[in-house]
Image 1 (cartoon, rainbow, N blue to C red):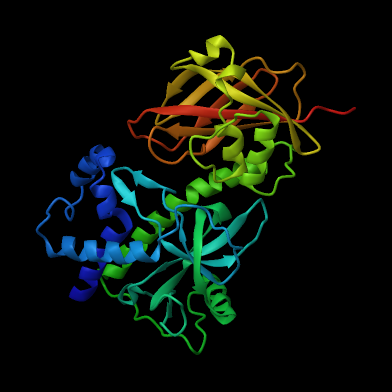
Image 2 (cartoon, one colour):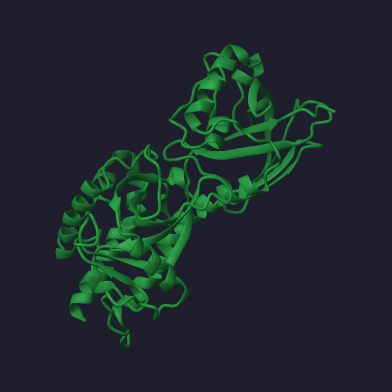
Length: 384
């Protein structure tokens, strides 16, 4: 039990403590100070747990190198991949490090969505319902899969593949998801839970980690599902970028966009295309991109006025987009919160009234940092 208690301590650090590169980054010092106020491990630099965590962080960092960008190779069931760096990061004074997941299905029920099961490398924390795999069964050594912790991500949220497992393992994960006792003959059986078992607390931690990463992906996928019938012929973010640059030369992006939605909303038109007043907009008034489509292709991009009228709660924004075409129909409103540092954040809820240009959006974001609201209205005129 003592060994498992130590494993649980390391797991908490592996999942929610910043690695050395983040800890030592001056730009993230304020967040790290907040973390120190609640973390008993990072606040005491002399503990053995701190040294063990830094060794582990370096090992995990070596494994997950190259996961800062979306995967360039085709995603398929059976692959082991880390979730892309920067997907979550800081949240409520914890730093959520990207876990390694096993791809279960590439469903494409909505867009580029994939079904994954979370994994962990220390098999001493495997409990009933977990599937333990040995170094002979995976390309990355011993680990266990959590069939009960299966969730949806966007394919763009995954980093490069680390190798594959056999089809029988995928089948076993699917069976255990339905019935935690349905172990195949070849599987190792984890010991039953004991009273106050550290593995129980580890399971609770894993649920929180899974939610932290899946919630952003799911909100983006739901936005796509609920969107209007506007469709794009471009099958990649890069293809859409090229089309927009051809339509308006000089269009730029502050950082490489990871999805077609980010391409549309985060595009910055050249200054000469903006009205003089737009170039001076500050605070609650800025510009959005009005993007006209024909046959799923971009044909025109113009700036329109975006005003934020109110802000409440964690981050609930209301406002209006002006200068829209008359009788606008079949439009799609896309927006992201663009913090000064960190990745763009998709809303968890949004309402859009194309008749008035009014919007109401909610972000799961409570950090006290500077941000911009970036948005696009995409429409395809009726041909009737």
